[in-house]
Amino acid sequence: MRASELGNLLAQDAKAVAAHLLPNGKEQSGEWCVGSIAGEEGKSLKVRLTGRKAGTWKDFAEGGSGDLLDLWREVHGLTLTQAMDEVRDYLGVHAPRFDGAAPQRPHIDKPKCQKPQSWVYRWLTEERKISPEAIAAYKIGEQSSTAVFPYIDPKGELMFVKYREAGSKKIWAEKGGVLSLFGWQAVPENDRYIIICEGELDALAWRTYGYTALSVPNGATAHTWIDNEFENLQRFDVIFLSFDMDTAGRQGLSEVIKRLGDDRCMVIELPEKDANECLMAGVTEDQMASAIGSAKTQDPDELRQASEYAEEVVSEFYPGDEAEEGIDLPWKNRMAW
Image (cartoon, rainbow, N blue to C red):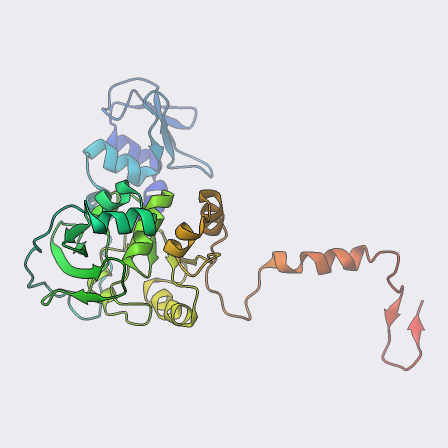
């Protein structure tokens, strides 16, 4: 059960939840009013109790807002994942059970490396156009002329390590690692959406554009990482998939979407092959934002949006001056007038 689903369940009894979290509040005009997240009496923080926006709240003094799951997290000082666990207990619902293979544990040593500062740094920043902030956020390392990409899980455990010789396509991995997603170390713990892309450099490029992304470990067509990441991905309401704009990338999308949920997976179409190619080609932040805003679910060919028929419907009512009036009948040279 995802974050938004738990928030919706809490909103079904918004008054009881608000009173449970903020017992010093008072109901006024369909809102639960209290001083702040700290729970003192006042009117700066308001929780909507009825109507379409039931369960939403806003702190007009401090600026916080969200749904009741966010309020639960803020009041108790929890991460999103911790709040979801508490809310499940409160509601009496169970966390989803994964029927696949049990997550594996790594047998891997921490690589001996340093922060990129020479050839690796120049390759990342000058050739690949990656920002220094992204390099630091993803904890990229350097071994001589080799870039080190650490795969660290949400709990901070090293799961996998990949290496790439700067300026070439030579790539290898440390033995004993577990296939997982690259980039958890850069993901804010309370985010409810994420981008999953096809390469470490693409994740760094997305971060350079201002978005946080995870990367699959071994291309678009191998998905054993899902077994190890299924539970970690449960908190996300929306997963944007930014796979390479090539045949392999498109083939890999269907399996990932099927396993992660076709109702929350949105496919991003980029003007270049991948995010790093976009960065090097000078694609702007506005263009990347537009690509995210235009992302769509991967629907069956038979399923069409009503908006796709808008022009045809309008033309039926307003055919224009050149349209032939009347209704065609099945007989030759016959027209009903």
